Structure formats: structure tokens, C-alpha cells
Image (cartoon, rainbow, N blue to C red; front, top):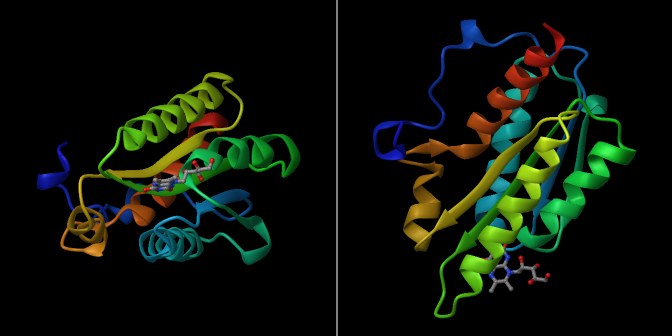
Length: 161
Ligand code: DLZ
């Protein structure tokens, strides 16, 4: 569903399995931290609301969104998590840099998913401006972090059944 019609923090809690015993990796890019930290906070709060414990939520930071691929790979290989939530925010500038970061990061995260072992959840905001990022990180469209957390729980459950 298009974001314009979908509030990112709205979901039916009765459809979400318990996250008790599930182990999550949260990789957060520090670029545009005003937005990425808000998404990470929302993701962690939602995981806990559904029963995840602090010791089962491993949070690590990377400098920018481009490093999310390495960060997520590390989580999969070394941290033995059941799912990874990759959180970043790229905002369009004057050069094509935006396109390269978005493309490289998206491709990398997609390739990790193709391994078919640990689901990697796409928490990368790709925005034309600050207003769009604001709207999706606790603004009028909710918080993308909440949506990512619910998706992570559902994907771990998918693997188990
Ligand atoms: C260099 C850069 C630029 C221009 N913009 C962003 C951005 O909007 N969001 C983001 O997460 N990261 C940005 N970066 C940093 C790159 O992701 C990366 O950290 C550097 O190119 C070093 O590899």
C-alpha cells in the first residue's frame, strides 16, 4: 500500500506473534541521526512491547547508510541473530550520490536476504527532503521503526512455521 494512505505505526497487534525468545540485531546509521535514532527507538520499543528482552536486542551503529550492508552482514554472521533491522535515512542532495547510496545499500540488503538464512528488514528511508523524513519518523505518517519491528517478528515466525 502506498505510504500516503498508510500510517507506519498502525497495525493489528493480535496478528503479531510473541517476540519472547527471539534475538534481534538493530543496525543504525548515524547520518541523519535525528531520523534514524527515532526509528531505532521506535523499533526497540515495539520489539519490547511484544516480549523481546534487552539482552536479545543487539544494537550497533555504523557511520552511514552505505555501511548498513556490512553492519547487517556482521549481525548475521557473528551475532547469531534471528533477524536484522537495518535503519538508515538518505536525503536527496544536489549530486547523484543519493542514487548510488540508495542503490548500493538496497542491493546489498537484498542480497543478504537471498541467502535465505536470516531475514534483513529494510528500514532505509529514501527521501526527497527533510519533511518526508520527518513525516515517517514519528510525524503524520507514523514511524518506520515500528513497522520494521513488526515485520522482523513476523519474518522470524515465518521461518519457524
Ligand atoms: C556521504 C553521504 C551523503 C552525502 N548522504 C548520506 C545520507 O543522506 N544518508 C546516509 O545515511 N549517508 C549519507 N552519506 C554517507 C554514506 O552512507 C557513507 O557513510 C559514506 O559514503 C562512506 O562510505
